[in-house]
Image (cartoon, rainbow, N blue to C red; front, side, top):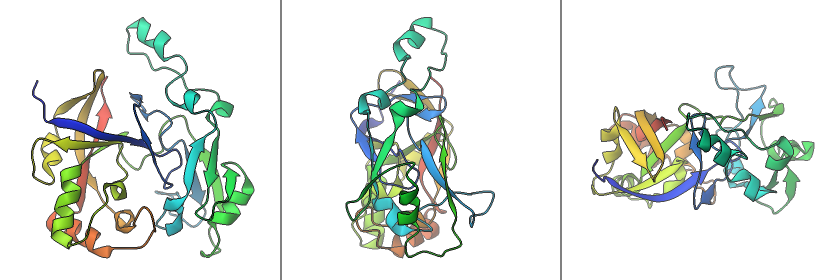
Length: 249
């Protein structure tokens, strides 16, 4: 086994399309990162194939901050140690719904419980009235594609060189940001079809490159658009940046 780099940071996104939280450690199982994309909003105006209300619809959504009321209960499955003792690779269970409750702080500093209807009213301000929103909750991460996303910090630097814009890695909303031994941008593409050991326990099969959309044009702090970033990804990198994986162990 050869070392290809180190973990630069770990992230999860408790509410789909809202601001993520950086973690010192995370539990990654077959269903994805624990408590990642736990909640999402569904819109009546979105296509059935992708029914979610996201930063594509309301740019400011990416500036909403999420906080677990019981962060210790949200850190790892409640029976993780017992499940690991079985030695069978069994899926551990999630905490009770009440123990994974989230509060959301808006860019204006107002705070709502995730299930407060007033939060939906706040999200719908200044957007097309056709969006009727419904809150969704799932024990599995409500991801767009695969359960785990990986992105190299060198790739963000490369895109900065190509566009002349300082590119914040957070635009790419990955779970695992890696600092690779290779100084080349997009070197993580070479992992597709291979397995990575991340930390002492987790093994990930890297399945495919990550196709990108307009979300990466949004500044994570201001929600202002920089179309040049998506243009560079589309024209120079086949619309791909970062990779998706599935947890094997």
